[in-house]
Image (tube, rainbow, N blue to C red; front, side, top):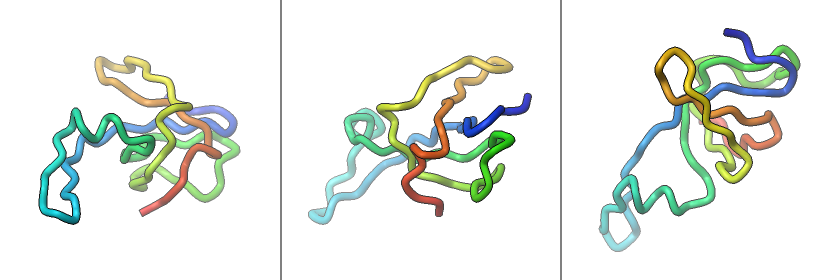
Length: 85
């Protein structure tokens, strides 16, 4: 599998978030947030600064979910990455 152009294939990470008051938000609660965390599986041929294995936060409102090799993968464009960890 090879992403083409500015597309990036990501495996989404379900994470628990701890608020400043100490409350833990579950995966369902964090799904309501605009940005989601994931690990890059494959970056497209025209993507320069993001590579496989990078952890990123991306704008999930512009993402698409596909099933590839029996796994849910998220497809985004390079411009939708807001932070590389």
